[in-house]
Structures are given as structure tokens and as C-alpha cells.
Image 1: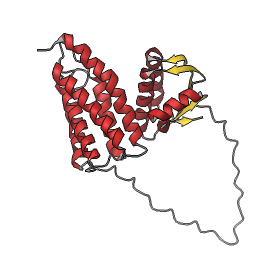
Image 2 (image 1 turned 120 degrees about the vertical axis):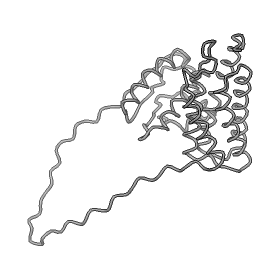
Image 3 (image 1 turned 180 degrees about the vertical axis):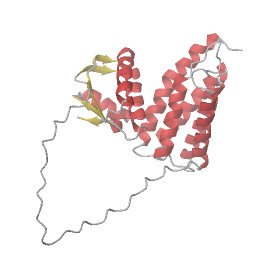
Image 4 (image 1 turned 90 degrees about the vertical axis):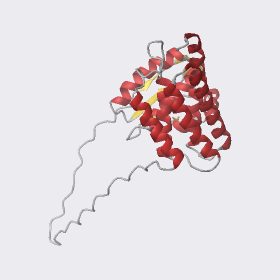
Length: 260
């Protein structure tokens, strides 16, 4: 039976450990063989699995369990977290965050369908077993034949019309503290930009005094979502204060953005 009193426990575990998973995976992009990062990822997945098991959210148990197995295998040197594996694991993190159990939907299947959970667990299990297929390289077209010109041909001078000015990238300018309210507002704006294929997005942090854990989680998810898109949009952070720059470096988030 679904225990409403334990729902807050499950949500609290997600609030703590989902950002840890996102940030840890982004750190692994620099070096997939970091024992301390792999250990923290394993513990985060284990904690989510335990909380989900207590409340009976089987979908979260399944996803967190196979993720934990992956991180343990990586710790033992049995597998390497490749870029393709990273994309799948970040999708698993997104699914964990989206699961919303309730008395009417104790497994959260209305928010994350069972078929999607099975798809993710199969893919993450393939990472653990070393059977995840690599992304095929795009086919290369045959080179065009060289143009043959007559020695007596009159040379043609190409003229280039004036190119239109390049429009600046769309820019968001949060202010004060980058917290849950600011993050949610920007999340909606950025989702629209990235959905429409914006090649570059700029966040001007000149008026931001501090970034709280929710703001860090937002930045981690933004970098992860961008990394899964093809072509990958460029993310720029401008006017970053020394304090925030150091915070991004300590959490490994500086690898997901171009700092200007």
C-alpha cells in the first residue's frame, strides 16, 4: 500500500541525489576513470534505489538499480563510461527526476510510462554488459570529380554578395540569486529555444550574486540536455564573477559551458 507519509522522504532523496548524479556524470566527461566521482555516483544511485524501495516506486527502483550496477562495474574497471553511455545515463537521471508517485499512481507511470522505464533499463543494462551499440559514423559521400577547364577558357571572377549581419545569440539575464524560482523561469524559456534548434544560447550572469544548489542542478541539467541534442547547441556563460566561476570549476560544471 502506498504510504503518503513517506512521499516526502522520497522527494527529499531525489532533490539531493539527482543533482549529484547530473553533476557527477558531467565530471566524468573530462575523465571517465575518476574513482571518487564513480563512488559518489554509485552512492547517489543506491540512495535513490533505497528510498524508492521503501515507498514502493518500482520504476525508480529499476532505473536506479541498473545505474548503480553500471557505476560499480566502472569502479572495478570492467566497463568505461563512453559518450554514448553518458547520453543514456543522463536520460535515466532525467527519468528519475520526472517520476511523480501519488496515491492514485504509486509507481509514477503516468509521468514516466512503464515502456519508457523498460527501454531505459535495457539500455543501461547494455552499458553494464558492454553491449551498448556505438553510434554509427555518418556515411561519407564520394568526393566530387575535379572540374576540367580548358586552357583557353576565360577566367571567371566570382563575386560575393554582401552577407547579412550575424544576429547575436538569444541571451537570458537572471539577477540576484539563481534559485528555484529563477531556474524554473529560465527552464521554460530555454526549452522553447532549444526545441526550435537555436545553435547558441547565452546566459549573462553579471547580475547574479549567488547560485544555490537548485541553480547548480538547473545548470547541470541544461548542460546534459544540450549534450544529447544533435547538433549540440553552444552554451555560453558571460560576465561570470570569480566566486561563481570557482563554484562551477569545483562542481565540474565549467566543462559544460563556454565561460566568457
